[in-house]
Amino acid sequence: MPRKPGIPRYRRKIVRGREVAVVTLRDSVTHTRRDFWLGPYDSPESRARYARLLAKWEAVGRRLPQSGPRPILAAGLTVTEVMAEYWAAVSARNYSSSHIAMLRSTLRRWREHFGHHPAAEITPGMLREWRATIANEVSTDAARRATIAVLAMFRWAASYELVPIEVYQRLKTIEPLRAPAQRRIGPAPEAAVVAVRDIVSAQVRAMIDLQLLTGMRPGEVCAIRPCDIDMSGRVWIYRPAQHKTAHRGHERVIYLGPQAQAVLHPFLAGRATTACCFSPAEAMNAWRAARHAVRKTPLSCGNQPGTNRKIKPAKKPGLRYTTTAYGHAIARACVRAGVERWHPHQLRHNYATEIRKRYGLEAARILLGHCSALVTEAVYAERDRQAAMRIAAEIG
Image (cartoon, rainbow, N blue to C red; front, side, top):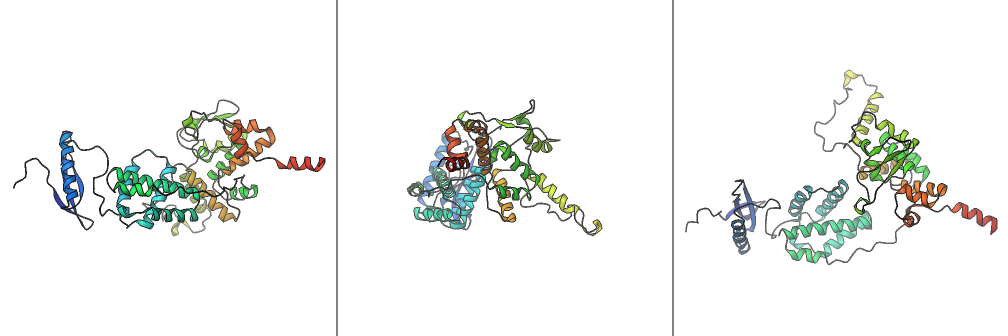
């Protein structure tokens, strides 16, 4: 029997070596066409989905949905195929660079373990075993965040019918990961900071110095821009555009004294007011210029700058440092210097300890931007035990 004119046809298409049912719908206003995958060809489920999709399309005046992945039945989809659809959706959202970096690392690890596995057959045991591997290789906190990211992906996939809802319901039944007793984080060792500071780039060195002089968080020092600094007074005032407690309505004010101003001044000259002061691209250019300056090969023998540079490198330095890139720069420098590894946030502990020792707990609270002195007391400001030991030696 000939089909009714104007009704899109249910047809067969080979997708990645499998027979998939496909229907092409056309938008009645924009006249754009879009393929919708329905699942295994000639299966009852795909026929039923075909009917539902046509009914919904007719009900909205033959308009296509504005967003969302192609509807496709869960049967036969691999983890890699689900991840591809999920990443396309996540990339369009306005997530922070650190969250995108965490998500990219998590999905890469998940693909390495289960990339070719059918997504509908992922079990809680597989997720639990993978989570334990992450906890052993990295940390318990990283494993917890990775697990949340994987569950979010399967929740999204279930909402778009890429996997059966039962898959997500099974996965979210796993018990929470219990963190071991956390080691108290203290200030970075002074000798290790000095050793690292001598071998890093000028940009990273300035960021370290600013943290020691002002108590900034790593994200705040990475994001500093000329337009965020009030330079009208003797003491400059830096108000980050984004900070940790902005969602609570708190204001973050960082005071830059003469020493901090001297550190920052070379990175302000000739810079656009909305550009970040510290740039990996500038650090790379300075490193290349320094290498070229000490070369002894004549320019006529292939020593021209840029002659051996890739036209389309896989990865290029960015225009601003992220907290991850900043931490990696310090970690690599620790290995090169052969010193104990430390991370940028410990420099905030160094600053808090020094301020509390010299000016008291209240001054440390104000300069660190804490609303309560309890946070300063419990987390950042290490006690000055030398005074206690001296008193005990005198009266004990």
